[in-house]
Image (cartoon, rainbow over all chains, first blue to last red; front, side, top):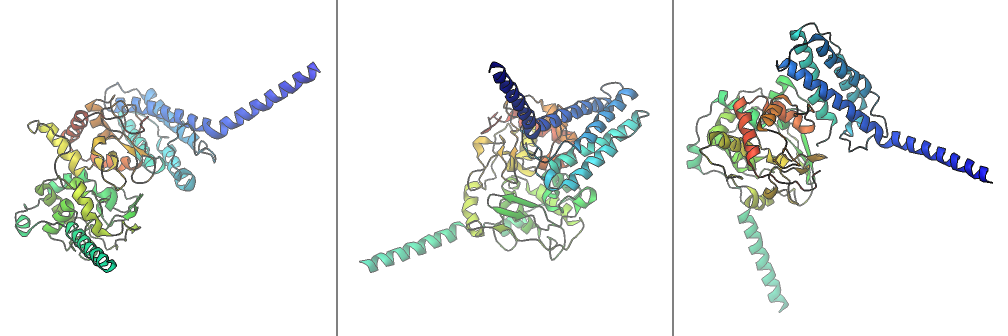
Length: 147
Length: 307
């Protein structure tokens, strides 16, 4: 009897945990994760902006890393706005992402393309960084709600 | 007895109607005021154009680059009162403002009165533009006149009763159309006064960043403190120096963000502010610094329901 009860407890715990993780994926975590990813893009943008303005010294490896960080995020964004993630984590994702998926995908693809440049010197970085960051406002205008 | 009451009611209704008619009369400039308007300078008008953000509503939806200079109308503003369609204000003689006089344009900008003598809806932010100088309005008119003409036909607003009765706006204007400054500043402080002039006037920041009451009037006790969006969805940020607003931003941070579109944390502006920032980027560093100085000066107000 005791053993049976244990089995029941373990089984319900397991079921409960499955339920918890399923809930987490469906209703909030992905919204949280994409915000973290956006934060990484913001941090990279901060480094890039300081370099472009001459507030920190230009370094080709670091500059390339700035673009790569943005590019990685761009590649992930295509997967991080699934159906069912319209809410959660105080998301500022606009309903237009789901009602105009083709437009959103095109904007993400443009960002990914604009962040895949190779950095050789400060001038090439300035050009690439300018093109890359022009995507921020353009995409947020259409696909981010007022906040 | 009932007959007398009936007559009394009829007389009262007539007086009421006459009163309504009288108090809602569109109030344009008189001929002497129109004759005194200064001559416009198109080159100087370009700054006014970007400060005023005309293109953000009056250019076609999604227009970028030079297409922003074709003011064919087209952007819709969805509000609790209905949907407003920004009209064609290109210099087309038939469908735009090509046939307008400077007096008619100034009446539109500062009195909210159309050439036909009707009230405009305050979705067109004339309550802010009323604080502009006649010279800036004349310069803007000269600038608009030399932009490309476009023959797009303006759409009619889609509004329900009673908001579809334009005449009623006469009462609304009695309450809310006032060209006096919102915040008193020391006019000898040129930077602060310039910032006040821009923010309260041409740039019409308060049109979105100040919450509105049930009939769409601004709540001046919450000046620039943000709140639920009056247009579209979501909420508008508090841009006063309260902790729930821009308290942690320096004046330099504010000016820089208007130039680049990035917050101090390198988040970027979104929604309608993305377009507004591109307009602000066209201003001089001095004007952006003046706007920032004004925003740091005004009372820090906690927005209703702020985070």
